[in-house]
Image 1 (tube, rainbow, N blue to C red):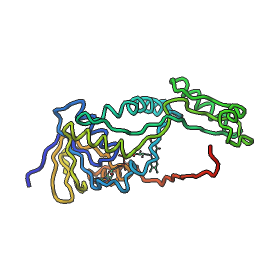
Image 2 (image 1 turned 90 degrees about the horizontal axis):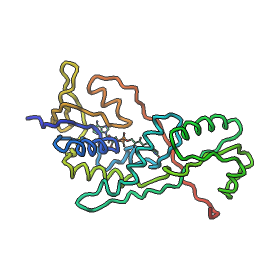
Image 3 (image 1 turned 135 degrees about the horizontal axis):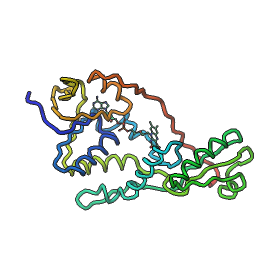
Image 4 (image 1 turned 90 degrees about the vertical axis):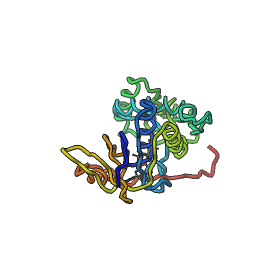
Length: 244
Ligand SMILES: Cc1cc2nc3c(=O)[nH]c(=O)nc-3n(C[C@H](O)[C@H](O)[C@H](O)COP(=O)(O)OP(=O)(O)OC[C@H]3O[C@@H](n4cnc5c(N)ncnc54)[C@H](O)[C@@H]3O)c2cc1C
């Protein structure tokens, strides 16, 4: 079988692979980009299981800067990701994260807050009286402080964002192939092609591993040992008998 060709082959079409396909075809419309995704329903992908929230309250400058860039994109995503003049609705709601600290946690809350403020994140540090007045339903008896994001934090429709990146990337010329990346041909330390489970071969100058929690097994296809392991995350949905 003659190999299919692409400038960039991306293994994994979740939010990372699809956002990358969008950016590559936006920045260089002449580039040929192929996204290989084994499960287009995304039934076990992190991108569809995600709580799809964004915060600025991180403890390292790099994470804060990434979030600052991301909120700027999310605020304009409905227009930036439109296809044929039809906009999307990712339903961004900027309602803030609230971190709470007991006495022994205050020092680290203050340290993180100082880094966030230094980088321009709008985060307010609140004492128990301020917490009680802003959130009257909150039991503050055992709290020493809280930090609350005043802007740039909240949630959105993660599946809508993923679908919009896919649709826009396709409209810009990216191709999505349904299949599992099962093998890679390497020569002289470089990856030359990816083989799919139906024996299709994509020869490509660059191969991107965007397989999320499966990144380790995809790296192994190229003989690379990557220390990535899946970890369970749990999302609780709480219903409250009283109106907050
Ligand atoms: C429960 C939960 C809650 C979360 N909440 C948040 C949150 O609120 N805010 C936040 O920012 N982040 C959150 N995250 C993290 C966020 O969802 C992930 O960082 C992000 O979705 C990762 O995207 P990804 O594209 O790298 O991986 P994925 O979405 O997992 O995509 C990887 C894709 O690769 C495909 N694939 C794997 N192997 C192969 C192969 N060999 N061939 C072809 N395809 C392959 C898979 O089918 C999958 O679709 C949460 C994660 C979880 C699990």
